[in-house]
Amino acid sequence: VKTEYYYRYEGSQMVPPCYETVHYRVMKDPIRIHPIQLAELERLLAWRIAPKGSKFNECKPDTAGRQRSGSNRNAVDLNRPIQEYHNIHRKVFCECKDWKSKWKQDQNWCKLSKSQKERQPYNFDSNGKY
Image (cartoon, helix red, strand yellow):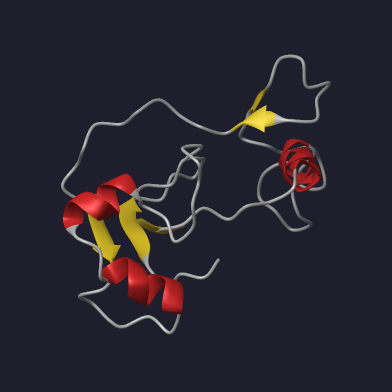
């Protein structure tokens, strides 16, 4: 990904023990991967084994996800219902005004007007796919 800009979200953890403050960072531009890479990531999440020394389910299957129908147990859904906004949640977009990116693609994107950025949110032409 040739971007240094990201959205930062301070919220709560999605799975037990559900820590109150967790920091999520989502890159401005999506990382494009091959479908085989995505399938392997989904398999690893679905077949997760709790680590040795874990307080819960040591060395046993341990995923917080719900088995995805039709996945032959090779994929789980990890999303949770939309949560209400709480005062501990804070959203921040780190971009052009915060620092100058080393990437030419970011520098060019920063020169766009607000309406141009809304029409072209990424450093690459997504052909309307994203």
